[in-house]
Length: 498
Picture (cartoon, rainbow, N blue to C red):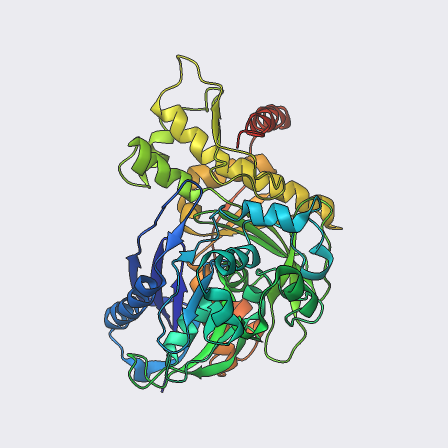
């Protein structure tokens, strides 16, 4: 009897495979980093072929770690870094250009040209402002800058996808019959899907000048898309769930009801608030997006606050400044001081995302005095994550009818007790950390398991969620307001620097 689900979690910096049992416990893992390429300032690229090689490798590692084989798996789920854009040759399976990563800002000229003074011109249809963040401007850039690509795209020789599509296509056979599909959550991040119909929007395709022949089929987040190819390590295993990483984390947090929310702390930070079957239009700089769709059921929508740089700031302290040698050291160093000493870091490496949407912003460190040392810098780096999350929570509270009452958290940085306590203090609400922090992979496993009957329904999934620790706010209101005012002044200093 198949007692396990495999989740493939293809992220911005690494690929992982995690094996879950029926109780939602982790039984085996595999992980491998891939190279980050920065060929020009503002450009961020990945080698999609390297990513696929790593995915295959980590699946093998996870199966070995769990001491099982493919015969023990009921299904495979996929979750992925969103917006990152890959175009490949349907006949050979070779990418025609390096993948353009969600953080990449090379498309600012494309965005400015399409916006023509109004970055919200497509927002009513797709829920998103024009930004370098999303897939459509990246695809336009490729069509305009890769020789011969437009003609080949119009002839149907090429395929476009976000990373979920790339992994699914390869996993189910690649050039030999691979399934070219995406799910509604990933499609909702391209700027090309109608939020109302959950189909590709012909008027958006025309506005962007993107041939429909490039696009994958849009499917639900929980259904059997196909089976792993016969030459795959997962041979004949149903591939049955796909969700963009932040939606997957929301699903893994069992935030199935309107008003429930989670925040993921990874390379960036991402707040998602479930809005039920209603598309809520933000007046405060948040994104309207799809949370999930289960088979033929109506789609469930969400508001999202996307923060570009959180965990990657810690990586920057490690790799570029040498202030720490490993990421966990940032908490140890931050604890050597009892405050930021008046120092704030605004990590606008790629501009500022929600709620500001300022592509002209650049990173700044403000409030430096002779008193400031490594400990203050480390603390300011951690605190910058909490401040940015507070910005998007404040926006969500203005958009929502009911303010946030608690925040469920996940992702690598959620293990940092110092950060979680400061986040609770800054928000003045309880921050709740689950027993399983790998909620992104768990969400993909949940979606796949539902599709094949491994779990019965959402109530069964809700029963599996367990709390590990709750952080209660303890900061007085005056201190909270003083710190927040200092942060907002620092944010203003980051504007108009690009």
